Length: 314
Image (cartoon, rainbow, N blue to C red):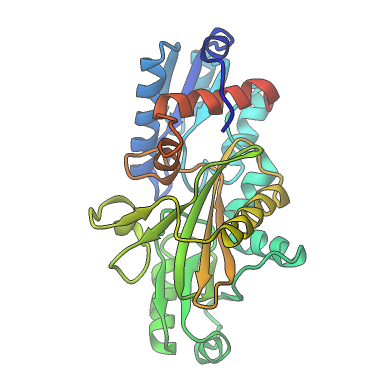
């Protein structure tokens, strides 16, 4: 990745407020991510403060008078265009994608429909509701991944291969979102790639002994394996990176994002989802990938801030 001028970036920064926490099911992870970002800004000597987002967020933002918000709110309310719209209304620049891109990426059905329209490979899926013929879903898709349509951190996700379990897991997923989908289960290897505008971080190949890369595998299981660089030949790696770039561009994303992809046993890639506010915890993929090319956590923050300083969504 290209070099940056740390002194120049630091000189152009004012007061940065980190938004963290919130009310979504991903609050726990957001608090950790936001805390890590705040600590990094402090180490860099940047004037910064943090807000645990609640009903008083507008008053607290007015009081704080930030020059830039570093958004580390994961999930609904923080990653779906809601906080982005508020910040734009208040005239406060912020990190990450804008309102529309955030909303599209958060909605797995909308993003998949766009990818299908553009010919970008993504797994077949069906929406679920209380009137769904559970057996018909299994007959059409076979083994499926049940997912909340709007959500992250693998919360509320399960894999089922029969109608009875599908009906049960639909109810579980409803605890995390009012919309639920069933996606054809792609069996094979999973990859995750960080994107920062026109730059890609090294792809991480994910391996777990669990049934799939769930919340426990992502954040708690010490046996989770992250292989970087991935076990792909040059042609396949280039194909994967092209798919990642096109998925990011298709939703009009900006700033930092992360794209998750599956590869089946025949070597075909399938887009899973795009995250517009990737985690910044000790277990998070983007900071780990950045380290592989000599970018420590604090420099990663500077690179994100450099991008935002240039484009300044407001």
